[in-house]
Image 1 (cartoon, rainbow, N blue to C red):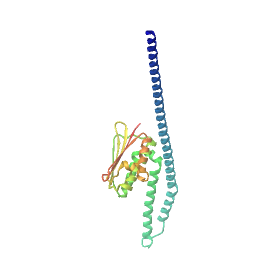
Image 2: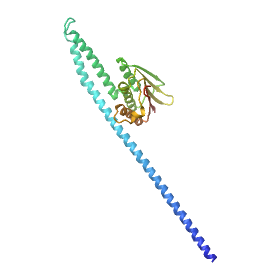
Image 3: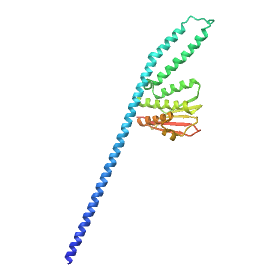
Image 4: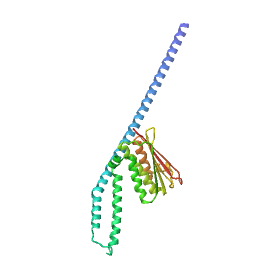
Length: 266
């Protein structure tokens, strides 16, 4: 009888051990399955991000190519036609006492302004020029042109030892800058713009654009799909991510807006 009891205990013990081994095996299998599932989900997320970035990169490259083509067309065709018209007006045999003299002079002035505006648009759109003169000079040229309009007060502050940016990154940063300025003129009702360019000692390029306009709810604006400014803000965020940078948007209704782009310099 004792031997029989011992056999029962042994059988029970073996059963418990087998049960524990089975449970452990099931737990390990579940753990490995979950880890594999998490890995696959992470890989899918990475593939999705890469796809979105490549899609955005392609869209931006197509946009830059289109801008370059339009800029070349403006320069080669419309610019030349305007120059011919200007030359034709300048050689008209008119004296000051002629009744048409004043009208012709007004046309010349307007034509000069149109030629200047076309030249500015061409330079702003042409990607090669941005790459050639650098981001700092491109920003300076843009601000000088805006300052001449007399519509708004503009200050530019550059600090740190200048470093050249990768040409593609410089173009992306300049397009973000143009989007900021465009939003200010369209929506901010600002009287003053302060632009700061800083080359930090830890090899970073920092661009900050601040205005004293009416401000807005930044979080709400970025989630709006029907607002042009909301789309513009999301485009800036996407551009910054695409070139390995970051963007900070600080704004409150009635207290102006400050947008900061930070980019590591290699």
